[in-house]
Length: 558
Image (cartoon, rainbow, N blue to C red; front, top):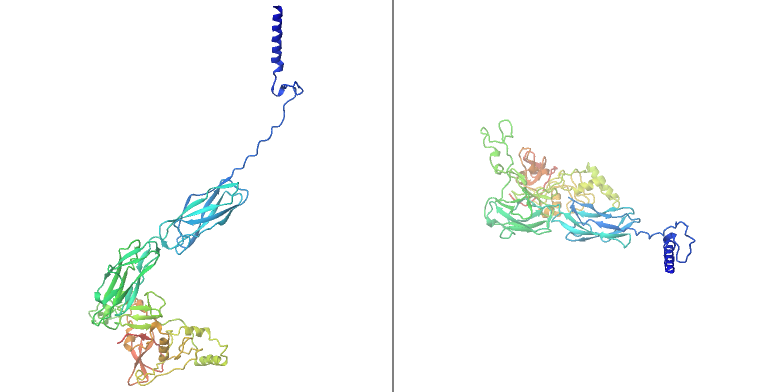
């Protein structure tokens, strides 16, 4: 019993010792080998370093969509922003490419300038850049158009393209075009035709359809046109105009003048030009001559009264075609009416500044247009002879002086004067007149006139020589140019003193303040021909050897 208790006491002490000394751990305890050499040593070792963090890749983005207005004219450069979430340490090369959706990058109606893998560099350190896009005004009415604008770049772990495409919308800035007639006044003689344009101010992406309402006093048998039965006309999309023709029918019926008017109406997808929506065609009646153009009256003191004068009745302004209403219009004034034509004989708009001849729509007479440029001619016959001597002395090195070249270029100049000469005995009244010297081909200049350098034939400063040049060059397509009769010459003059009469003079500026030879001679005084003074309108005799102005006419008859 005593031994048993002793053993139990010994076992309890052993267990307690183990608990106290044998179960120490961590950095201060002993390991299972019993090595306690570090039991009293402090723990101060450096921890091992962790892994290096991976850099964040920069994200590159374009806006999903951008909108620009088409420029009013020409082209403009617009910019699309690209952004980088992180700046790069090296330059970034982007490749820019565009693609049409319904916009056009080529052709007549181009909206913008295309890009195909075009390089663009974003400098290192930048987080945004403006990418260029050139857009253009195409003078074309259309809806909004779109394209895609894309970017790409070489593969690189430093960045990634998150959104690389933008849809670009270009808003149209041209608006609906305006439609009008190209010319709004025209005179057609019987058996004459002309073409007329209905035109747009700018192109349209839509077909334009219009009706032409026809009015006027013309008989339906006196004209024909190329319009369809419903008098409509279409301008196809992408075109600026459509054309129709009108012919005044020739007949043997004695009748008065007629008017034919076409008016544009019921347009689709266009605006009407209110000032040019009507075309007025005048078809003259039987041949007649112009009135005087005198529309003011003598009131006992002055000659500029516009109302009738009971004390001075039966004045010129009370009678004739120049008393009709609406005597002011774009093709003439006070009963006068004119048309313009080019060198080839084609009809021109009334406001054309360059034209070769004019037609008097009342008489049917064609009149040459004479330039009024300031020219320099030789000062004397001696100067002419000196120039011809220079040519004879050294023909290989002779140079026609610049002043005389300009004078020859303006060989129809209104300042040139001529003597009267006609070889046809049926026309000269029995006396040929005064023939002038023939100019050398390389010195076609004289004291009173000049001839074109490429001229041939009668190179002289007389009426026959001048008319031969007009016919040789077939001015306005005619080869029957002649001098006017006295009546025809007087019919070109407006005697009105009204300051507003500049309308007529814009057509015949060159006839003012001059004396013109006519084709008529005097049976008793065969050395003289009839002239007309355009200041007074007086017909008078002029010696055939005197120098006077000359104007050539074609067609018409008394």
